[in-house]
Image 1: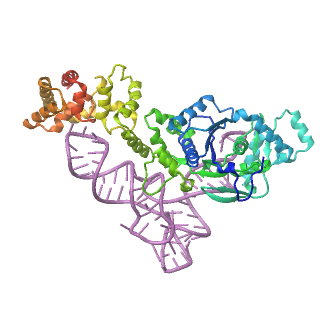
Image 2: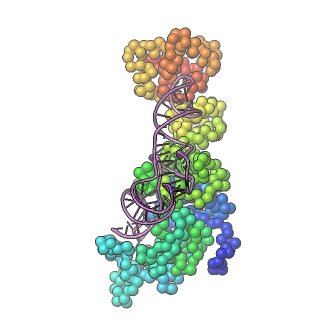
Amino acid sequence: MSDTPSGTTVSAVKDHVRVRMAPSPTGYLHIGGARTALFNWLFAKHNNGTFILRIDDTDTARSTDESMHEIYDALKWLGINWDEHYVQSERRSVYDDYVAQLLANGNAYHCYCTPEELEEIRTQARADKQTRSYDGRCRHLTSEDLERFVAEGRKPTVRIKMPDAPIRVDDIVLGSRHIDPATLEDEVIVRSNGMPNYNLTSIIDDAEMQITHVIRGTEHLNNTPKQIAIANALGLEVPQFAHIPLVLDSGGRKMSKRHHGDLVAVNRYREQGYLPEAMLNFVVRLGWSYDDKQEIFSVDELIEKFDLARIGKSGSVFDIKKLEWLNSHYINQLDVAARTDAVIPFWQSEGLLDSTEDRDWLESIVEAVGERLTTLQDVVPQTRYFFNDEFGYDPKAIKKWWGNSEEKKEKTREILTNILQILEEIPAFDLQTIEAAIWKYTDENNIKRVAAMQALRIALTGTSFGPSLFDIVVLLSRDEVLKRIPKAIAHL
RNA sequence: GCCGCUAUCGUCUAGGGGUCAGGACGGAUGGUUCUCAGCCAUCAAACCGGGGUUCGAAUCCCCGUAGCGGUACCA
């Protein structure tokens, strides 16, 4: 088993990079988790290695099948595919064997303290300014104590005995350091219900699965010496560690499901119309950089260029504006056909689209919208008036462009009436003809182009912004335009 | 409380003994235009503080300070 040389020569199997992403299925995949997955995946791909997805579901009370599947979905959407897959709850016997070994060789012991007693010990330790919050009192139980506890029906936990010697932690991102054993306490590695705990299963599986590099968030930094201690007690090989800085909110606090809810859920960004490419590109730059000029990276470039050495040490704030910029960039990158495909689900979920709509028309709409989408979802406010006339007129727009005095409104009515007449009589309902006719009308009558156009825009779309109005007029069709203008005049 | 980590424009970051401290997002201004977006041009904006070392420090060392993370029979 342990024929791996301890010298400078590295065995063939260790030459092959094996990394893992080990989420606990207690909720959706969040931004930080996505980044951890991405870093691991990129590192594996860059090194022609293996990326493993391991579901760390030893917390049976909080783990759910549903969130497990949500994590799969999010990862698949991002294009982060795994080569191997494990579920810890199915590996119980593996851990049990190791625990038996630990108990047998005296590196672990049963602890009969109740949660209430533990709480008391903790409180006292804190009051006494102690470093440890558990004093290891069950290391040396008398037979009387033991008998009493058993008689009371107490179910023990198993604790690991922490060593007396300093533990050296090597970290690719943070560097090496020695951990004073006085700061380490005897961790619970098996709960009283028999379920093993994270620090135990994690390091066992890392060894069993021959993980070469553990890339995870710095919230695990304090777990690392504990896990190393467990591995040492078991004679297991320890992987290399790379602790990546936290993803922070705008207040500088760690992003978490608990405090930020859906704001951190990857699947939510999907629903809102963010592209996986944008998500990946955004998230990878949180803590990692390539040089002083490149911001946009394709997945292939990322695989080629990703390097653990270029990960920074300080936390990064999640800036939605940057994500939005990246997203619009990637949307604009799509050709009209692809963009139309991407946008159709959003029209559908708004109930704007029925199956009879013709493809060419839809693509023309997308073409007209041009680079105005920050998210795919933006297509709804940008284009809803193409599909029906059940929109309201934006009050602010009305006030500004239709006018708030009777005098101004009368002028607007006049303009719209004239335009209506022009469009009714126009020989050909195409862009050039319409544009020429309208400009002729405004210029000859000394009407500001913008005033006429905005008045018409509101009449046709209800809003004061959007694509070129001539595009809209043509796309809407003559019948529809001729219907909407009188409706607007009446509303005025 | 205890243990640990970190510190460059508002944000993501480059640089890492000699640079006008660079880029990007965001912001501001002007231009283009039927609006918005876009595009183009321009601008504002940073080395946490204090001591050293040195001819020279954002960069190296020390001491502070601040922020964050952990402190569970969660992961």
